[in-house]
Amino acid sequence: MAQERILVCINYGQQGERLIKRGASIAEKWDCSLFILVFDALPEEDYRNDKSVDMPIFQELADKYNGELIIENSHAHAITKVITKTAKDLDATQIIVGQRTENIWTTLIGGSIIDILLEEVPEADLHVVPKPRADEPEDWDFELGVTAYLDQQPDGTYELSFNQDEDTAHEGIFFKHLNTDFNNGIFALEDEKRIYEVRVKEGIVSKLVDIDEE
Image 1 (tube, helix red, strand yellow):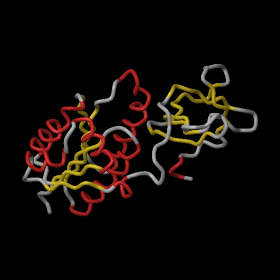
Image 2 (cartoon, helix red, strand yellow; image 1 turned 45 degrees about the vertical axis):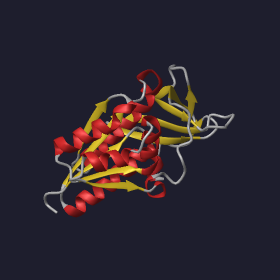
Image 3 (cartoon, one colour; image 1 turned 180 degrees about the horizontal axis):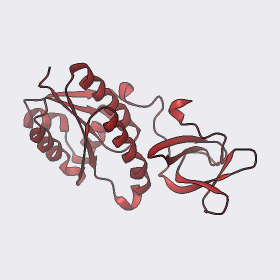
Image 4 (cartoon, helix red, strand yellow; image 1 turned 60 degrees about the horizontal axis):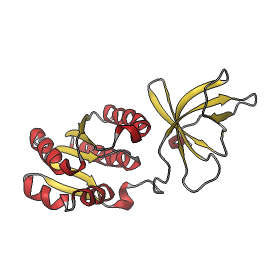
């Protein structure tokens, strides 16, 4: 398996983390090269905050698993051309996409990207990871991220704020749960070049502990 070269294809969102980890586990097992292609077709003005959270996480995972992160900015209709060119340039032998991601891209281009890739890159094996094995335990049901702040309180907790003032301890991105009247969701902040995601319940962060470490 020494000659295997794995290409994981993702876009922004929580599923990307799971697919990277899945590709990394295969690369580690086979002791082969790992490449992570982030296909960026999202409008900058609408998704700036989401990208600012996801990209450091993707880079951190790439560094952790000795992978190479590749970012391609293009229009949605060009996804198959981008994946095909990247796979051929890298001599990829394994291409991994998530079922949910594939469905989104297929809807955007009006045809199956799987059929196109099988035809355009016949030398590579194509893996479509089923949704239950790639997704988070729950679907990503949050609004677009907005810039927000955490103000430290005397009791050691932090209050969510959308205005920076003298009590501000941290600046970050707040992702509010859909269908809630309160400020419940996730606050993402950077500390020592690492992205932390902490829970927000009714506008309060009880402790600065990453969700993955709870």
